[in-house]
Image (cartoon, rainbow, N blue to C red):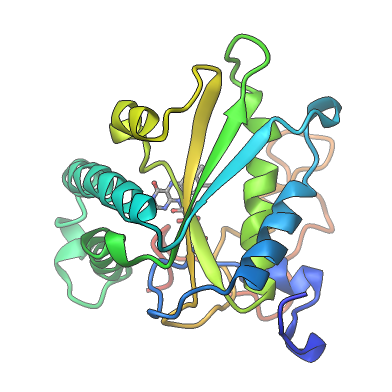
Length: 236
Ligand SMILES: Cc1cc2nc3c(=O)[nH]c(=O)nc-3n(C[C@H](O)[C@H](O)[C@H](O)COP(=O)(O)O)c2cc1C
């Protein structure tokens, strides 16, 4: 195990409730024993028929890693610029400096502008053994979440993105990936520049029904103290 005192490792339910998307990192590299523990957790994930079609490529500080970060960084900047315009991040409450929307836009802009400096980038891949299907992600994304949870447990943080999408042809050729390998996600990892904290989600009564569609289960109540989500960008 990486050198984290057991008293500093959150229990599993706390980790689940506090694993936020972390997009700002210190410059600290991630030591290989911590990477090993995170990727070990990822590889313990379930998959259909236990085929384990997921594969992870880990890019830290090699020359090729720098090339991959630069390429995906280009894709990230283009994707974010399009999303910023299409989703109206600069309209409505986005014009109010400290609104959740404006803060989110600043975080995203800073993330993509400095993408090349992320300490570690992980490409989550899937070896296709049959025709692409809408459910194939079900055999790779649990492993991605295991990775993020393990990062949280070890005091690191990360975020899953689709930033590889726009530059996939160039990436495939740079990495000489076999045709049957699908690129499922780009995950960046590092020591959080800010802090972990409770995730903000809709109350569970909106999301958990009993035996009648649309009617919350009577026991579906958030634990006391759960932060209230007022917009999808965060609290007001
Ligand atoms: C399928 C999926 C795709 C995502 N794509 C991106 C992305 O392209 N860029 C990004 O910055 N975050 C991405 N995220 C992170 C989400 O934006 C983030 O988890 C969500 O806003 C909730 O924030 P929180 O985890 O901090 O509570 C993605 C998450 C998932 C599960």
